[in-house]
Image 1 (spheres, rainbow, N blue to C red):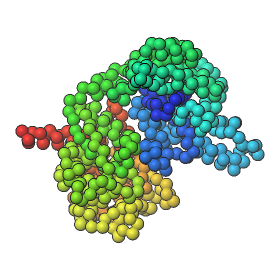
Image 2 (image 1 turned 135 degrees about the horizontal axis):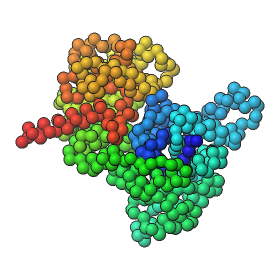
Image 3 (image 1 turned 45 degrees about the horizontal axis):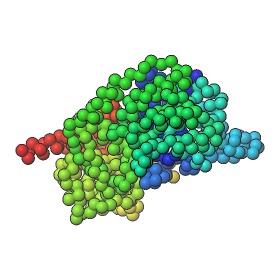
Image 4 (image 1 turned 90 degrees about the vertical axis):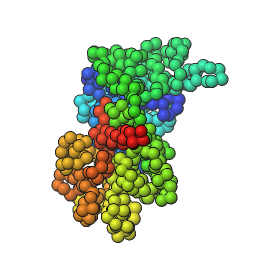
Length: 540
């Protein structure tokens, strides 16, 4: 029978429940178990797709096209399993489903209530992910903080699941903050005690308590929390802030985290094989080289808006023995007068995805600077469209070239919504979402990086390369290096004669893993490393 683990958080938000859940997933997978993960988010948005990156960070996209919380990125990167549309549920989606069922008469005239209708919808969702994936263990993170009004239906639902499947098949892990007071130089356990009391008021008794802290905890703290929160002494686990994110599973395993989980759930599994993970962490800690990459975007004030892009670059750095120093450059600050000065000294430039016209001209200047100075350039989604616009304007000579997204009245829309190209995309406004195939042309940078002709990558966009401009751009030297299998959609562009000048319409960052860097990010960072080495040799 599938085992269910529920991860809750207390005291404050942003504690790292997702990292704790993802780390546990990695440890259980290393024991040979099949693991599925999901996130229950209490906000009333149906999904994060329309939420501002400033508020919520990036939108993570699964293989089957679900727009999800960024924590799912942590799950995929740690566990190295593709998640699906059953991996993220919001309050908005729950009520949406329930109200549609009510309108269809599926409740046979019953009065629709939070209990049982809302909670049953949540329960069905949790059970479904286990059935769909045939997982041995389903790890479910409850978003928000204990005490939030919004989280109560989710907590009630998982309480009922625990009752239905039995305590031997369910486990509650509570992540709390243990603050350190500088004035008295001591940690305080009271916030954790109050948080557990609040959780118990919901009918849930935590089986394991994970203590988030910046400083190592004293033995007395563990004893106190074990005693007053009524958990076994070895079920109080320290989760200390670490210099490197991917150390977390190893640190938690030192405290016998997965052993305790397996014992409490009655799982007979071998010791975890963490040799590959340990080797990766060793490489992370012992990198010798360094490159400076300019990330030019419009949401740079919140780094989580580009979380997967930054992580994918770091993954490539792990493989290539290189520290990645990211320079977060607000594209709105780049002007014709200052862009050369602001971009000077970079070993590579990356322009990630985004929507809306703000900061576009600054991104175009960044692409121009990279092209004219032979700096490795990587354009992702919007970044590819930027490369096309820049090339059309400054090389082909189409001075007013633009995207239909940013200028509907523009005469030369080299990027536009093209119904004839994407017949499967509703003109009403849905995005092209999820995995789509791409055929790579021979002799290109794309082929050199991937090493195969046929690939599949995840998309999240509405506008496409305008085929009316294929001839003009290719005759001027732009290579259309990746197309859809039917040849109608331009998926990638590049300057093949450069070490790396590539734009892709999809989001490769979603498929990068710390122990398996994405081939395009590896190619981009390698080109940046080679450029830096070449310049250093020239200076000598």
